[in-house]
Length: 64
Image 1 (cartoon, rainbow, N blue to C red):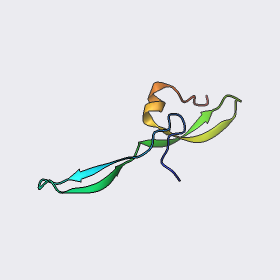
Image 2 (image 1 turned 135 degrees about the horizontal axis):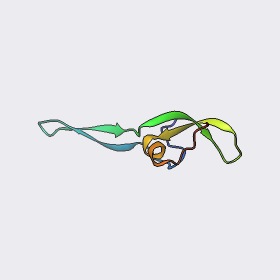
Image 3 (image 1 turned 120 degrees about the vertical axis):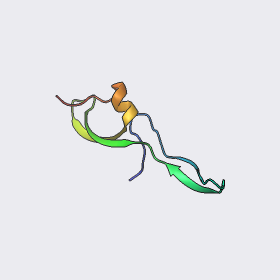
Image 4 (image 1 turned 90 degrees about the vertical axis):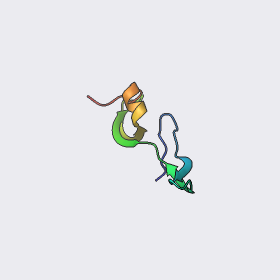
């Protein structure tokens, strides 16, 4: 399953692990995704993978 937020489209970024000797190896920064239940515009409840920034900002409407 892909590591993409369904609201903002945030994806993994690439970078380096840098040692004290300044050697670099490739690494991947994954977004902090959570599986939550969400009420969509039609009133249906479904599970979505959402980053925590979208959760905090209120873009995700949780069922009551």
